[in-house]
Amino acid sequence: MGQLISTAKLTSRRDCNHSQRSKSKSTALICPMQAEEAEELDRSSIYGLSDFISDLPDECLACIFQSLCPSDRKRCSLVCRRWLRIEGQSRHRLSLNAQSDLHPLIPSIFSRFDAVTKLALKCDRKSVSIGDEALVQISERCRNLTRLKLRACRDLTDAGMSAFAKNCRGLKKLSCGSCTFGAKGMNAVLDNCPALEELSVKRLRGITDGAAPEPIGPGVAAAALKTICLKELYNGQCFGPLIIGAKNLKSLKLFRCSGDWDKLFPLIADRVTGMVEIHMERIQVSDIGLVAISNCLNLEILHLVKTPECTNAGLGAVAEKCKLLRKLHIDGWKANRIGDQGLIAVAKSCPNLQELVLIGVNPTKLSLEILASNCLNLERLALCGSDTVGDAEISCIAVKCIALKKLCIKSCPVSDHGMEALASGCPNLVKVKVKKCRGVTPEGAHCLRANRGSLAVNLDTGEHLDASVSDGGAQDNGVEFPLVVAGQIGAPSIGSSSTGRSTSYKLLGLLSGRSLVACTLRRLASSNGSSRS
Image (cartoon, rainbow, N blue to C red; front, top):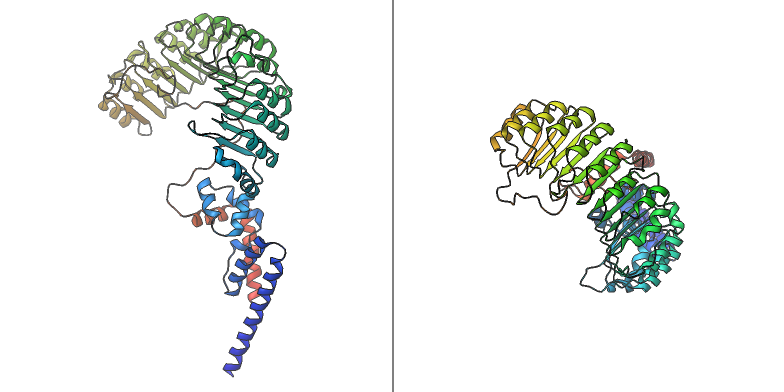
């Protein structure tokens, strides 16, 4: 009797295996990839395994993949053919080494990653980059591209950029650096991409400092542009028509661009009235340009970095009209042309000031006291490379700056007495960074920590370093306040975990945290339970 029962079970299992194999063969006639995926599912069902992840819809699995960091996504794509297919179809961001060897691989790469909307093509400066033919081929396969970053693609020409722009008219962000195409290629993008919102150009070799450089812009993209960033251009003023024509521009950043910008700023301020952020670093601009900028009444963020021709008068003109100013960064470059007078004008006219960074500027207790009294929302303050900021000024800050949360002091004649004043002042202070202030000892920092247990104190005496103010601007001076970009698009990707957990544990955590996937799992579990019963 027992032999008859076991024989019946074996017969039913053979029938089941035969039906599963016949199903796989019929599927193989339709799609080889789907057939291989079906065989993997069949093997798990034959041996009685409960594989809930294999039962998840493709949409749920794609949602999980999109929450992983790039390295974990790559590992997931190696699990099985189904995961490889879904991971490729759900990847929207892709970064490629843009050497010439990439060209023959383009069809296979973009056959797998057929939903890419954000693409980065980066080449080493010593290597030969892709050319026009490769870029055109990419544009034909990625017509939904919204972001493109080009780095050191020196073999791209105006013709390639023109063909690319005609195929990718939905482009919203373009960033190019160390490329060799010129004004014609840039104008082609501006004429064919009406949705372009952000443009960043650095070291564009095709734009030369000739007698009559070809103007760039405005094009159809000018109406949508919100951010323009120009860096290290021989003749950045050829972008003047674009800047003037971008009536909805919110953020303008100019870094080390040659030419006299005093002539252009009056035209910009007259046409572009909604500017919120202006960043100028090492450009030729004086009080004439600042007076023109003062007509941007909505200005909230102003950076003056190494512009020695700007003085107290220009800063006072900006402060008088731009009453919405929230963030002010000044690197005076030890020129002593901006000091107490300009800062007092800011204190009297800009009550909404939240962040103030002074590098190579020499404020005294007089201006700091007025700033602290009038700017009641001041939360972040950095004083770097100042010869006049001592214990008296720090004591004034400790008493007056009630809302201050973060304080950075670097290369200033401050001692432990200043730290003692901070210990009993600034009730909302959460972080203090002291660097290269030789008068501050570890004992002074320890006293500050002891009196303010919740306060984060970072002390670097800098005895092994050069105590002079470096030539690299705010970053070299150790200022940690983040730069806020108006109209910034997108969000940073999720970083990889440092706990060393495997990808499967991360997947389980993501599964438990998402209501959509959790509901699907509950339905699958209940259906499996009822079928077994």
